[in-house]
Each structure stands twice: as C-alpha cells, then as structure tokens.
Image 1: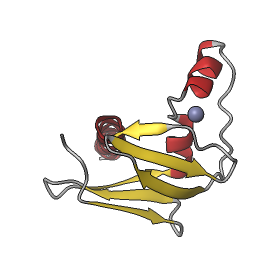
Image 2 (image 1 turned 30 degrees about the vertical axis):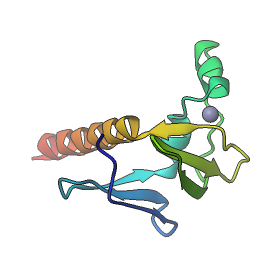
Image 3 (image 1 turned 120 degrees about the vertical axis):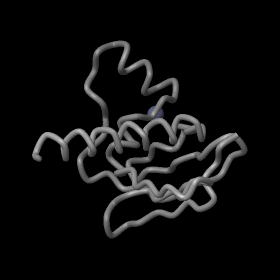
Image 4 (image 1 turned 135 degrees about the vertical axis):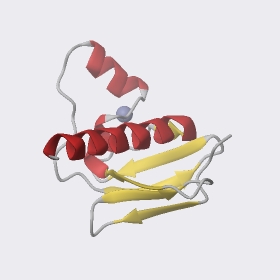
Length: 107
Ligand SMILES: [Zn+2]
C-alpha cells in the first residue's frame, strides 16, 4: 500500500498536496479531483455522457483519511467520493506526465 506521508489542502493554489513515501510531492488541482470523482453518482453522469458537475472554482473543504484512501469534501456539497490512494497516485502521475510532456514540447 502506497499511501502518502503527508496530505494537505493548499487553498492558496487550489491544490491537494501529497508527499509520497519515495519523496515525490504532488499537487492535484481541486477541479481535477472533482471531475475525477468516481462515486456512483458521478460515474453514472459520465456513462450518461453528461458534462461533469465541476465548476472551475470548486473548492476542496476537507480530505478525510478513510483507510484505503481519502474522502474528499467539496464546497458544492459533494462528499460521497472516496479516492483510493492508488487512484490518487495515478492521477498525480498522469498530471506529472502531462507536465513533462508539455515541457518537452516547448523545448
Ligand atoms: Zn462524485
């Protein structure tokens, strides 16, 4: 199990910061997390082809550790999604890859 050693809500940059056991630090934007929610309600919306409910200025109010991951509480009243550590790790890696890709493109 690869759970972060540190989880912090950084309201200033609108990111959830996590420090992983290997020393890597990731910052996932609230809006990305909100649209990545995998709860039954959000999954159904995605299956139905509806646009995600997330607004660009959605805020993360709480990140509650819940055993195998984090329960994220958003200011739009959405608090049912549990984000397993492995899913958060994957989102963080995808984001890092996207950033690397962008960087190599501008070089
Ligand atoms: Zn959801």
